[in-house]
Image 1 (cartoon, rainbow, N blue to C red):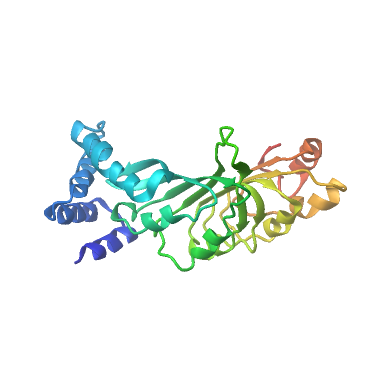
Image 2 (cartoon, rainbow, N blue to C red; image 1 turned 180 degrees about the horizontal axis):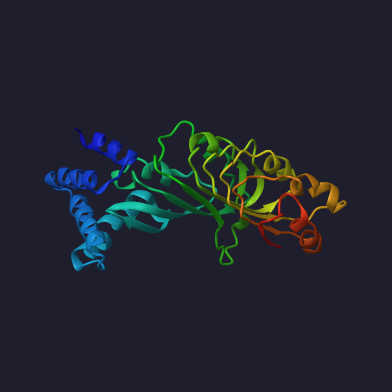
Length: 282
């Protein structure tokens, strides 16, 4: 089996035996990634801390090569069994070229979690092209968590604030097995939410336009729902009535709502179909 064939097998089932076969194959070609995989697998079996050789390979070989390939956008990463399990990237108005590079790298084939710290620069910055691009580009076959956070501006004069989340709907078709989705930014266009494996959804700075997509969402395994709404005019009860009446998911255990109207939600949410019998936080 070819190296790429072995990676495809690992993407379906990354059991230790298959991981060791892949490690031996790439080590035969002089690639120290194979040694790193073996060291991490051995450590997992023993339950010990990383030894000097593993740390040297990670710190001086693998991560410098990764940062060189991705550029300055890489903030941090975490490894499991010799492969990347999580990456954290800085994102501004530029295209997410780092992810397009990362998806082609062998060490990222088992990536499970991506965190994007996102901001707008000079009035530009919208994730809509990124979501749309997911239809055309190769995917991370084991991705289960995608988090968009608001990055730190540190007083930079060219940073205008949170990035525009934009039209998210292409994400659902590209990654239907997502289990965690967090969208912290502005101007969400959620579309028709269809995420049958999702267990956690969180979003901030939502407008009232987000209520209808949330009410009609298909997420039968959702366990945690965290929503933050920004200010809006008009009476509160008619606006949020459809959301409060939505039973959401039979698996839902916890509902958290942050808004300019905490008194309303404290009174109404625990008695509503959305909050009844669930842990409620306001």
